[in-house]
Length: 191
Image (cartoon, rainbow, N blue to C red; front, side, top):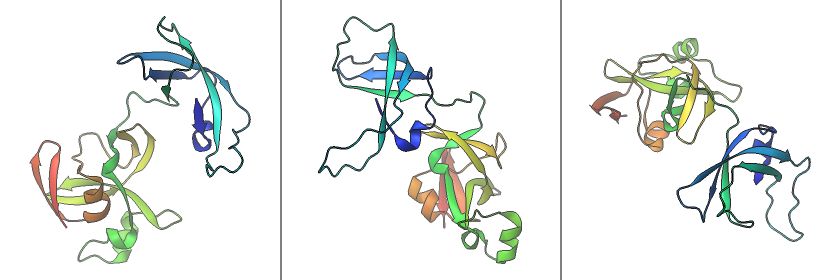
């Protein structure tokens, strides 16, 4: 399996993997990382492919008799897990500048007292529903899956989080906007 250079630093010998082989429908094979290349694959000369990837080998545990060399497969590697993580949908986490977080009637200094911007001037936030309004809470995030992201700090279990489309939360929703809860897990916002 080829692994992108940004992800290779998280891969270790013995890590658990799940392999899906195109020809073996609805069958997930398990395996462990057996080898990790110490140098990157090189693209063919004249190729426009500028991707830097490292080859790893995964040993399949208890392979079925129907598995054949050369079959097309994809693997998911589990680099870290946290069974007790407080998590929210990935699209619920957004970034805003201090100016964007300043609520109507507040000064920028009020926002600076509530939020700490990173070196690029952004604050990672989740909108929670408080008294019918979307209120930005600064969060620290951790590991993530394809759908969920871990919240390390800034949010407590049981708080009602605004969910919706990526665009609605990342671009359209503003701090202090009135929201209407339309059903469990669904909120509409008025920016």
